[in-house]
Image (cartoon, rainbow, N blue to C red):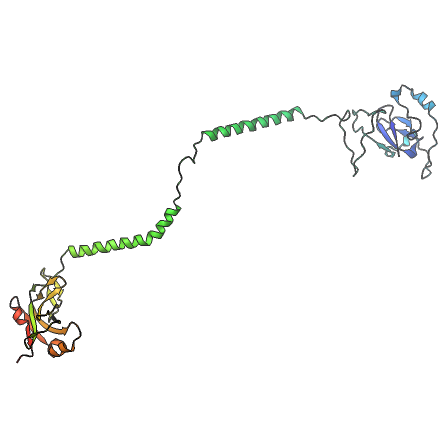
Length: 322
């Protein structure tokens, strides 16, 4: 237990160990000397506020028998009083008022040894400084102003989403898929243009050609289905434009009457002038026709000359005749 004592001079409230009751004490703050009162339940401590004089309080104070101390300690002189024996409460500064004898006991210290700090004058509300309140109000006003300006600017900016949007990814993918077909179509167009230019542009260089017809007979009977080939003896020749060209062979096929007409190339009738080798062979495999055609015509051993006229008589053949 502790003895609660209020200093008569400065009003400081002190808590004193109960084993020091009846001994001389000194206020740690104002150095006022006093006698430590007995614990609670005995006579109250003298107070200047009660209207009792210091001398009468001292005279009327009963002598209290102090409790035996754990150790035999000799009484201390007033000047040797140790303030560490007192548990002082409150009064952290010289201008802090005392709670008084009639004031309620301050809150007990919290666990851990810390004392709760109570504001001066009791449990008064802590008020914010005026400067902090003004700064908070100014900050709030500034934030509100900035938010209003931002909304105004946003309302004035054009809306980017008002126009229609198009997704070109699908179109791009379709173009990539169609690229091979488009490339093939372009290649075909170029090839067709080149062929048309080739056929309809500069004429194909041709040698001088003459009409050549004839007939193939065997014992006076027409030999049908015989292919007649006239190959120039000299492969090199001259075109009608004076260019040196390679001469081709002229061919013809006999009809049911054994008659044939020579063709230099598809769509171009005639045969080059000069000596040619004569070849004959069945159009379709036929042992009968092969036996009726003399060997020298099958190997190109027969040579005739194509002239400007009279080639029909030159190309009339009658095999097997006596």
